[in-house]
Image (cartoon, rainbow, N blue to C red; front, side, top):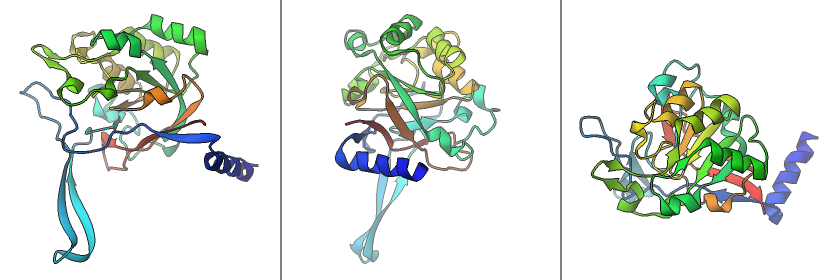
Length: 259
């Protein structure tokens, strides 16, 4: 029966009944990374150094050395990334069971609000409205906040102002609802972090990071193409690199959606 099921999935991909949507930005030196206050250490941008290119340094091969932070580009946050999750069992990317990386996904569309308000908040009422239209969020689902923020480029993406970055994100009560009442697998955004740009002003500060990772849940940031996903019914594939003791990892995020 399992063999037949896998054959059916393969055929569905071949015929277009199912399709794969790439939710990942291209890693390049110009892709923005989060900027912290200057007294803190900073996230490294992506860098690629040519080692050889079919030349005297290596006549038959081309390859590169890469330099980047665990949290550069489209990336995964493990529980160990945040102080609240530092003691969570299996809280680093190398220890997380692999079945956690493939699962159902729910997309909550906040794009209209984010188009007119850079500090748009995902609230419990918005979650309840989504559930009225599409059903209760299933347990162990990924929940993605669609804002279309990924269509921004350069400085507009970080949207730094005199008082810091401004970008949409969830309120503490919204995160508590998703974690404590819906028992989600993880939360993802199109912005540079799972929290709002002004998330330091919430209680607790950066509630998505604090609540999610303290509960052993995961985060995804810098996603794109969420406008190609249905509100429910897709399957997310998000497997980070197996870095020993890693708190996160760049990765290729994809979704299986009806064709």
